[in-house]
Image (cartoon, rainbow, N blue to C red; front, side):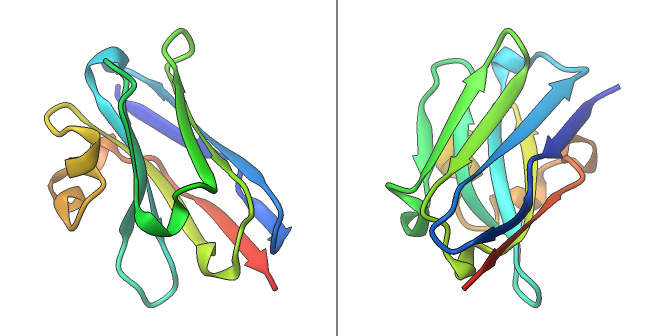
Length: 131
């Protein structure tokens, strides 16, 4: 059974840091791109950062460049998102998802995420950044 378990969210003041984890099982982790997506209230889901577990290439959307770092631990089948210098606009539910076809730049861009099978999504973790 494919499982993605997102964790690590919480309430933090602006300027603070959080590290999200996406623990996975049930699929060939080292063949996939794994992405972090977020959805703020009333807004559409958007890509944040994505990584290829094959070659560790990464992609970041412009608003998080220089503040967020994505990494993968292939031994633990886990992807992390280190978030520093958090801003109130980073608030939302953060989801992780996996896709075997797309490189990180495609996975994180536009509305590609709508093609990802429901079973390859984690359940989401809330990140709230207070001003």
